[in-house]
Image (tube, rainbow, N blue to C red; front, side, top):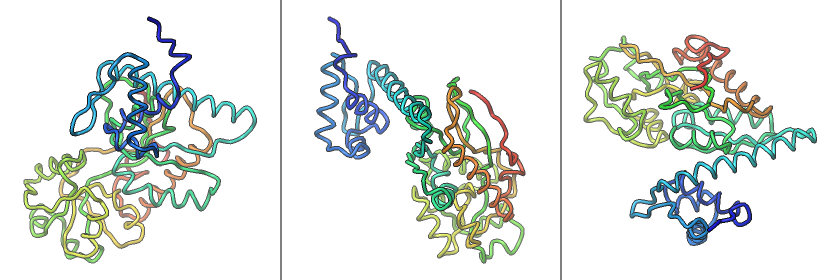
Length: 329
């Protein structure tokens, strides 16, 4: 029996499916859409009844997309993305600059370079509106591919499959020793033995960056089993400011404090693997003028941090001030 989706499928149902797929939870998706949980549940039930398929499997921990749901989810993202691109094209036809930037941010960038960058952007370009979506790589890239995001900023992890996205490196996120500026750890060369004298506060092992840090510390013969760990970068920052704890993590997480001179970064006794960071965009869609303004601001911001001498490997030293092309994946 034909479904006549072109006549019956409503945009709100597509948005509901997209949000539930992105958040993995009806409760979290309802908050993101600013609707009640029962209303979103009804929208999902309406979509499933219309399609005659179960899109998500419910469990105590949230929802999991079914094979049929994955097909619908990818189509929903493409359709919503096409509508956003149509909106942008119409704006260009009437000579109106798009002033809203849909920006995805990976955790390190969201905690580090973006607060200072967006503050400057707001003062220099008050006409621009940035809608920030934070998440993991596997959460944000499908939204970028579907046109829901204009670009994603953060570490450029190698893609697991060809995805039609362009990646451009603007800076590095080197793993460094971080502590308050007057901390005694900086009074002598940073060695593995010196690091053993101090308590560590680190990101949790459940975070991807936490796993990378633990792997790197293992190469130095350090097993941070007694470290304090937190998912909150704000908590880690406060521990560095107010105690003798030190941290080992990407120094971009403390970009604002490095610029203000309240936190200091020092290289580790061994060089960590390259951790290029920058922005990701769709290969088939040029950045809007507003997004270009943001990217240009990011370039200048990381160059300023590098000029402070606090960020080894940022901007000009490794990635190149003009940005090195990583290319389509």
